[in-house]
Image 1: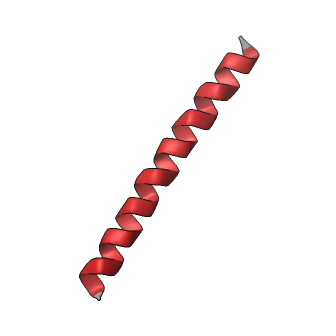
Image 2: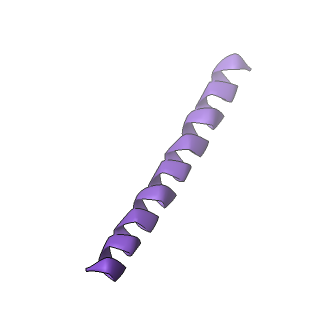
Length: 32
């Protein structure tokens, strides 16, 4: 179960990071 929880945490953080990168690139596109 511990490994499973770790994988879920990793997946969530990966998705959040991806979303964050998309937002940053969108803001850059808007400013430029």
